[in-house]
Image 1 (cartoon, rainbow, N blue to C red):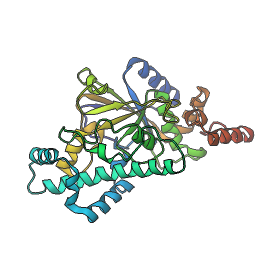
Image 2 (image 1 turned 90 degrees about the vertical axis):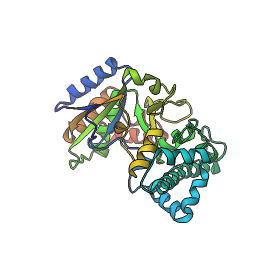
Image 3 (image 1 turned 180 degrees about the vertical axis):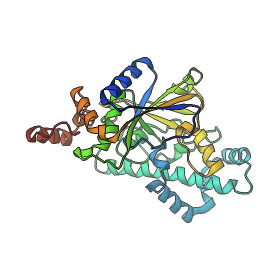
Image 4 (image 1 turned 135 degrees about the vertical axis):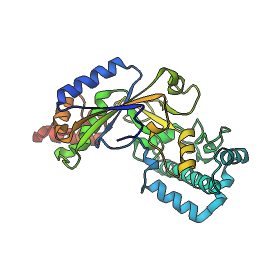
Length: 318
């Protein structure tokens, strides 16, 4: 799944009950751990905005064709010069920086357009009162963009499937397992082409606790938002991880975006896996613990689906 062997390990289970028990115990042992479900165990910890072939990359390419190095004018002069100074490439520093700015602009535009669309049909968006572009680059710290208050509207957009640089996590290990297993057995159709599903467990070592709580530093950090402002966040015990400066620096150096485990030495990652054929059993066991679709994603639509399933005898599949 990931490649930094110094800070992650893998544990494989062939028994669903044992896997649930292990995750439950792990959550109680590591109070500062957060969890993420992957329906494919090999997935990396790369936010949706950075994934190859997505709408953000396409928009980035469009911006580069349309504006080229004019995009650099969006950066404060001191930030632009500092980025180029700290990244002494063989003539490609400005080109990489231009591409980074285009990618950041594409991220910002996706969130802005989604929030504006919601507002146009009278759907409230927390934290959204004007385009967020002026806030995007206001940081004076080299590479530390987006700015620190780039937040609630982005989390809101992320929660509804808009690509951002936030990664969804939860404080509840079994809820992470639900997302992993239900992604394999969606609608009761087992995707056997997926060899294994996984729960990724992440926790900071003592040296990184200040970054965990967002006191200072800019490695991988936890971002929390008011659960009353973002639908489903309360039901899922949700929060987000974000990485700015080190990820931006990685991009400037390599031209690619990193998996989060590659840009921090002070977080530990454990990947807890099980074969795909156990997914439906996991979903069934989680339902008995009160973790299932309508409780994880409460809405009139999921409530209606739960009602129909209860009348047709199809409960336990999601």
